[in-house]
Image (cartoon, rainbow, N blue to C red):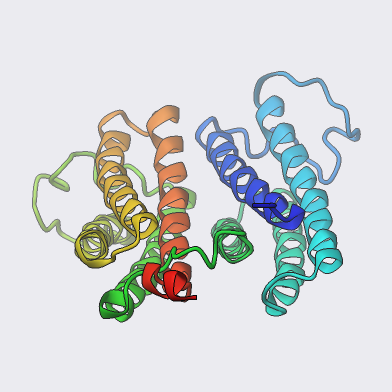
Length: 303
């Protein structure tokens, strides 16, 4: 089965975005966000000495710039090859707009010395683009009509569960970004308790923000486990079952990494992996939701 070039490009874009999100988390965790005090240059040049924090910050900029150029190429391929669904090309143009807005917010973040709202919005746009890239990679797959979707009896439940969990995962990621950029990561310095209590005194806004992030994380875990149970045991399609199992596993690991991030006082490795798993979870949930519009194994066989 031939694989369209625009599908390959969208698929690469998906993993490129995941890598960029991991790199951005490393930049923040290593306190390298202002290692380059100017933008778009770094100390007045595009080729600074790649040492210390400059290495991470400028590398992040280069990878982000490369993503914009690559996705523009993917959009051109989609236009040239005429994708299965006409709206794919429109969505690709929206993706370019998201990337340009993301780049502008990145510049504002540096020039205005990391304002919390802008930094949080910067990550929010990154997750929106990730969801869009996932959708484009899934619907452009040459295997779309090969029975990837769930059976009819479970389709609506899986669809509602996956979309609901994806929205919750996106909201949880925004709250996590706010926790990170307001330095609320250690507002509750103990785990699993918070200030020695299961429900801490909300004497400071940062404690409320941090504790809210924990509560949302547990709610997300419950939502994904419920949806995963339905999709795994009743979904029918092997791909749906795989994605459901992967989402449940990633969510469980995500909660554990959140606890480890606090336990190890926001060490670079657990914090960065925590962000990566949040992005991976959103990818899995969006992919699963998209597949609920694909033909089921029975429909593929009948056709």
